[in-house]
Amino acid sequence: MTRLFNAPAAFADEALEGFVAAHRRWVRPVSGGVVRSAPAPRGQVAVVIGGGSGHYPAFSGLVGPGLAHGAAVGNVFASPSARQIRTVAEHAHAGGGVLLMFGNYAGDVLHFGQAAEQLNAAGIETRCVSVTDDISSADRADQDKRRGIAGDLPVFKAAAAAAEQGRDLAGVVAAARHANARTRSFGIAFSGCTLPGADHPLFTVDEGRMAVGLGIHGEPGIGEREVPSADGAAELLVSALLDELPEGVGEPRGERAAVILNGLGTVKYEELFVVYRRVAQLLAEAGVEVVDPEVGELVTSFDMAGVSLTLCWLDDELEPLWTAGADTPAFRKGEVTAPVAGPAQEIRTDEPGETVPPATEVSRTAAAAAVAALRAVKDTVDRHAEELGRIDAVAGDGDHGIGMRRGSEAAHAAAVRAAEAGAGAGTALGAAADAWADR
Image (tube, rainbow, N blue to C red; front, side, top):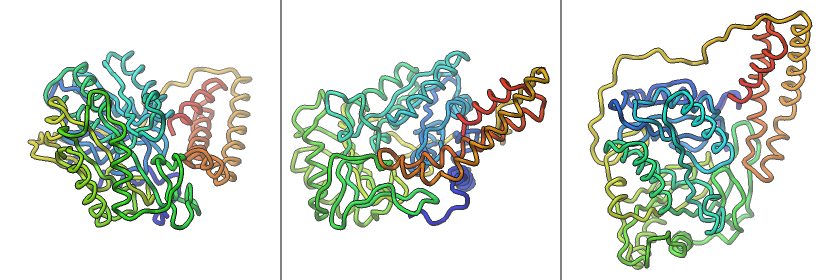
């Protein structure tokens, strides 16, 4: 379980603050996330990734030369807001446009899409690509509905390397989509993760059993099985992926693949190596040439005990993108000549303040009533946050209580500030709505 935290609702913010303090060589903070400590060359496409907290090193740990230009970081298992994404993208933008990349989850699709609309309207050409590598989350005929899990990494890497090559935005988008189309992942877990402040995991499996094909937030998988040996786990993972080859990939023999054996949180590196030993044997027997494999924690889920296997089937375009150098806090490959960081910049932590328009006495009275109502909402959510999380965990990822607590507190505080500044009901409620969405 997650043992070290202060206020659960502050966990994501405090984790990001500590991450930045430890990794200033690579990143600097901006409102909503982080960007590279040194700006990209003028005219380069900016690759901005993101998603909820709780999956480190995804997403902030993948920011640096050769990989992402910025990462928008949401609350625990929750999408960053459109404003957070937009702000990170604005800081990362180097004049060549922005590619927003994320796992295929409803909140991420919504908020990254909103941010793209806002950036395009502001004159920053922006596109979106979602990762859909989890073969257990939808049938082959519905690949666009699949979740993004550890396959995020090779897809992000392909896009970032294409940007480093100087490709334009259309070329970077094409590289990302090509990599996504040729990436497949499959996972297993032996126990669920416990969110900060919770007293039980999001899901449990009986002793000696494991969940098969579950998501990285604890979403339901495709069933349960007895826990196998390490070799048995490897055989299950490899066979599942070799049974679904992407379009354009013939028989496995003679193909090349980037291979990622990913630990989800509490499966230790030695265990991963025991499993990978058999993975490598099985792929060799199938005639697959493994290129620069990665074994370790790359997309986690707090303290979930589980592993996933990812195969990105390489071709002449993708292989040099996968093997290109990268230098980030959590992922390094080859050699990269990193630009020298410039002088420290003032970091914008909030949107510029807006002038409060004049309001009638009746409207100001209504604003005070709205503040009181939001206070009641905040207090009610606070009392029932644990139950909201429990209900959410039945079918989802269990973050609803934390998210609603953060949102309702932010909405109430924003409405109070607006009312104290003389705002009417419309202005106060608008400020509350923006703050709720943002938090």
